[in-house]
Amino acid sequence: MAPDPLVRLGLIGAGRWGRNYIHTIGGIEGVQLTRLASRNPSSQELVGADCAISSDWREVVGANDLDGVIIATPPHLHIDMTRAAVEAGLAVLVEKPLSLDAVDARALLAQVEQSNTLVMVDHVMTYSPAFIKLKAVIESQGPIRRIVSRNGNWGPFREDVTALWDWAAHDIAMCLSLLNEPPSEINAERTESLQTAEGFGETYSLHLTFPSGPVADIEVSSLWSEKVRRFSAALDGQTLVFDDTAPNKLSQHMAGTAEGEPVAIDPKPALTQAVEAFVTAIIDGGHNLTNLRLGVDVVEVLARCDAILKVSSGK
Image 1 (tube, rainbow, N blue to C red):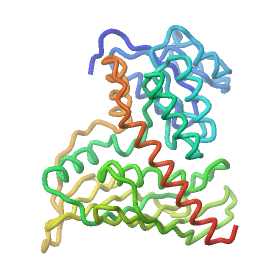
Image 2: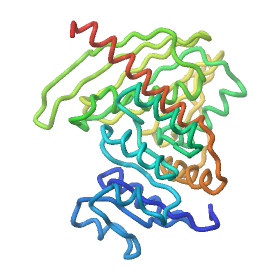
Image 3: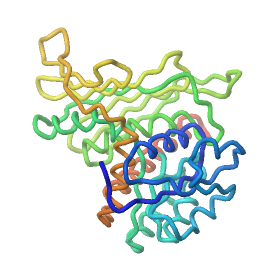
Image 4: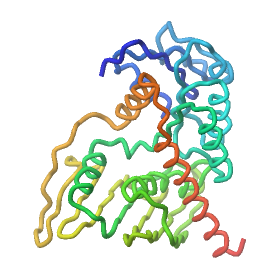
C-alpha cells in the first residue's frame, strides 16, 4: 500500500508491542512515525532522527502535526489515553482491551459518536489473513455450529490484567466478529492458578451460548509451557481451523476425512494489516463505528465473565 498524502502517526509506548509497531510502520510506504512517547532512554535508537521523542504521552496527544496516534501501553492506561486523543481530535488505534471497565468503554463509544472521530481497537487476530479468509468462507458456506478455541503460553504475567483479559480478548473478539451478536449465556471457570517465580498465572475455561444457536468453548492460559493459538469453527459438513503456530495457518477439514487441506492465504502479517486499515481509514476520513463497537462488546463480555467468577469464588 502506498497512501498519499503522507500520514503522520504518533506512538505511545515503546515496550515489546510498541517496538513491533515501530518496525511495522517503518515498512509501510507513505506512513511516517513522527512522534513517540517513551521513558526508555534508548528509545532514539529505535526510531529515525526525524521522530520526536517525549517522556510525557500528553505531548504526543497534544501535538498539532499528527494525523493519528497508536496506543501500545499497559491496558489500565488505554481508556484515559484514548479519551484524551479523541478530545484532541486525533484518530486512534488502541491495543486490546479497549478498557478494563465496561461502563468506561460504553462512555467512550458515546463520546466518539458525538465527536465524529475515528477510534479502532487492534484485536490483532481479527486482522490475520487466515482469520479474514476463514470469515469469508463462513460467510459463503456457513452457518457456524460450534467454535472451539485454545489460546495461551507461559506468561506474560501482568500486574494490571489477569490471563482472562490478556488472552481471552483475542478469542472473544474473533467469536463476536464472526457471529455479530453477544452471547446470551456465559459460563466461566478458573481451572488453574499458580504463583510462579515470574508472577501469578491462571487458566480459564469459558462456555458461550449465542442467541442464534452456536456455542463457543474457549480455554486460555498463562501457564502453558508452549504457545497455543488455535481457533476452529465447525460448519455443516466441515471444520475450518486457524492455527497461528502451524506452517499452514488455515486448513479445511471435510467431514469423514482424516487430514485437513491447507487453504491459501495472504502472507502479510496481521499487525501490518491492522496499521494499514487504520491508515486507510484516516485517509478516507472514515468514522465507521463497527470496529469500536466490537472493542466495547469484547470488554462487556470479559466483564460478564469476571462477574461470574467473583460469584463462584464467593468474593
